[in-house]
Length: 145
Image (cartoon, rainbow, N blue to C red; front, side, top):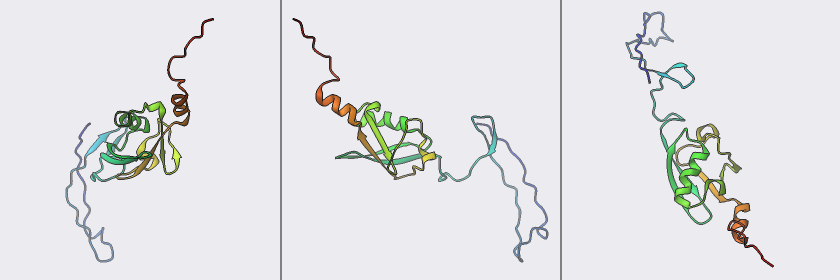
């Protein structure tokens, strides 16, 4: 990350008056950041802004719930990887629902609207549940005549 300094130029308070209220200027350091695409943008000051920092998500299964802390810019696939450690379900066996819709692995949490303390539903994939029930996941026996 790059830090660049720039000076903020101030105009006289008579030109910036707003209904009798004058805006007094001061020198403030502006922080810059370099985005992955190469764009240089002004860094946000607030840590509470959407898409930054760690968020806690409450993941509800059929009988339990888990509080998971992840980066706000994570994907649902990364969330499934963390949930596989907690629930012992493989990521391909999981179905993650947010706001009533199943989410794909490549969707970002902050782009969909997941915020701190939001609830996400975790369900087991019905196809894999059926395979486990009938034993298709294990090696098949061969019948010899």
